[in-house]
Length: 212
Image: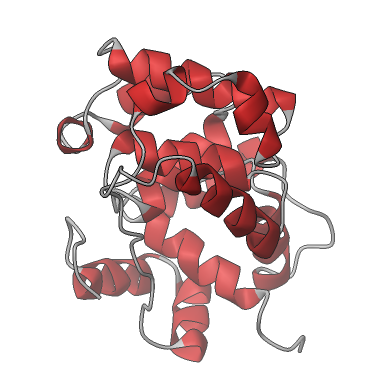
């Protein structure tokens, strides 16, 4: 596990000291196995995120592969200018919905114009500011932006409070009868700062454990 801008062992130790209940979960789950997904560019990562929304991984991979096949000469992946030069019909022919075609085109325009940062520059921008810039893209909501920060950039302190699975995991882990509201989860997660990303990863693993 490499590429994180923080020390995983330090993060785990902090969480175990800060929250006894989470410490028990960490002991049950075991070592942190969170992995960052390789990104060739910010555009490539977000274009892939748009394509994968609301689809199974298999279906999305097929569609994404068809889009890539439109650009056989793009050895490092298609670029914003490639998308902007492609007729809507060709993109729709790959299996993209009308909404996703518009979203990918909007992303391409914003990257091409310099409105969005490069991947290298994104690493230097604070979480809140970067999320605010990303959600201006059509089809990129706060959840998608948070997943980008967590699993592409490795940001240590992201807590996606609107994520249904995370709320469900918290309810199971802390023996709550009802799902916490986003605000309640945010309040509960204050003790996990500055490693709420790692806390989230461990909570998600709770859904994979047998119910006690």
